[in-house]
Image (cartoon, rainbow over all chains, first blue to last red; front, side, top):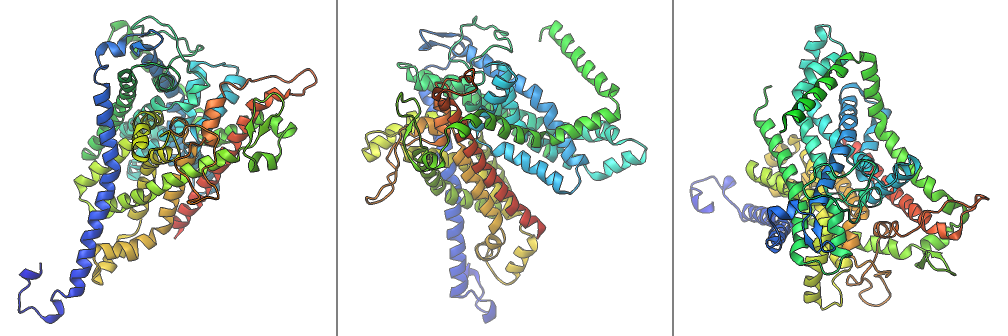
Length: 305
Length: 328
C-alpha cells in the first residue's frame, strides 16, 4: 500500500508508522479470529470423516433393514431405526400443533407486557432445562402419574415437550416475516383475527414453519437421555423390515439408545458396527438438518415482498 | 406410495381442514391462548412432577449439610446409606470449567469473525457448519469421547484411562460452542451501525472499532452467550456419562497444580442417567412411610431439582441481561 502512495501526497494523508501498525494489528486479528472459526470446525469435519471411514466395512443396505443378531453383535439396525421414526412421528403429532399455536399466540396475540415476557422466559427455559431433567419429568408425569408406563407414548410426549421451543421459535420467526400490511389489508376487508391468520398469515409463512418442524425432527431423533427411562428398550425382537412393529403402549428400540447400549453395555460388538450405528444416527440427523437449511436458503432467495 | 394409503392421507387432511373451518373463531382463539401459556404450564409441570417424586426424601431423610457438603454417595449400602453429592458437584464444575476454557475463546472469537470480518458467502458457510456442529446428537459426542478421544488421551498423556475430566471437557466444550457463537453473533449484530460509522470516521481500523467500540457495546450480550454456554455444559448428559469415566472422584486437591484434569469424575446429570434404571421405585408401606430402600430413587429426583434450579437461574439471569440491552 505504502509503495503506491504518490510522493507528492500531502504529509497529512501519508501513511505513517502508526497507520501501518494499526493495519498490521487488524490483519493479525482477522487471521487469528479466522483461525479460531476454522479451529472449531476442523474437529467436526475430521471426526465425521473418521466415523465414516471406520464405519465403511459395516455400511450397507442390509445394515439398515436387517434385525440385530447374535446378541446385537451382528445383523442390522432395523428395529432401532423404525423405533426412532415412531418416536419422532408421535412427538411431532404432539409438538407441532401446540408449538405452532404457541408461536401464533406469541406473534399475533401477545401484547408487550410482563405476562408475554414470562411466556418467552418459559420457552427459553424449556430449551435450557437439561435433557435428563426432562427425562425425570417424563418419568414422574407420563410414566407414573398418567400411568402410561414405559411406552412409545410416554417417550414421545417427553420428547415433544423438550423440543417444543424449536417449533415455537421457528414459527415466531416465520410469522414475524409476514409484513404487517398484509394483515391490515385483510382486517380492512372485515376479516376477523383468526380468518386473517388462516387465510393470509399462515399460507405466507408455512414454509418457515416447516423449517421448524424439520429441525424438531432432527432434535428429537438424536436425543437419548429423555427416552432412556420413558420408553426405550434394550432389545426387542421384531420381524425384519416390518413397518408397524410397535404399538404406542409398548416400549421400542431407538437409534440413540441403541448406540449407547452397544457401545457401553454389550461387550464384543465389532468396531465397524459401533461406528456404523453412529454414522446412521448422525446421517439421519444431518439429512433433516440439511433439508431445513436448504429450505431456509431457498425461501430467502424467493421472497415475494 | 400405496394408493390406499394416499387416499387415507388425503381423507385425513380433508378432515383436518373441515375441522379447522368448522371450529368457531372463539374456540380456535382460546385454543391458541391455551397453547400460548402452555410453555409456562410445562415449566411449572416439570418442577411440580420432579418435586412430587423427590418430596418424600426431602421430608424424611434430607440433610442439607450431608447432601451438599459430603462426598459420600452410598445409596445402595445395606447398613450405611449416605447421600452426599459434593463429588458430583465438583465433577460437573470441573467439566464445565474445562469446557468453557475451550468454548468461550473459540466461540466468541468465531462470533466476532463471522459477524465482522468475513464476506457474505463465507459467513453463510460458517453459520451452516456451526449449525451442523449443534446438530450432532450428544450420544454421538459421548461415543466419540469413548472411542476416539479415549485412546488419544492415553497415548498423549500416558494416563491409565482416557475417560476423564479432560476428555469430557473437550467434548462438552465443542458441544457448547454453537450456542455461544449464535448468541454472541446476535449481540454483535445488534450494535447499531452508527457506532461503526462514527468510529471509522475517526480513522479507526475495523479491528480498533471492534475492540474499542463494538465489544464494549455488546458486552452484556456476550456475557449472556457465555452464561447460556455454561448452562448447556452443566446440563449435558449422555456425552459426560460416556466420556468422564463415571467415577466418584474430586479432581481438586491440595497438591500442585490443585486441579487434575486426568482424574475420572462423575457429574450430577450422569448420576441420574446411570442410576435411575437400577434404583427401585417403591410405594410407601401401609402406614404411609417409605422404607429407606425407596430413598435412592427419590434422591435422584432431588438432584434433578438442583439441576433445574441451576439452569433456571442461569436462563433467568441471561434473560434479564439481554432484556437490559433491549431497553437501552
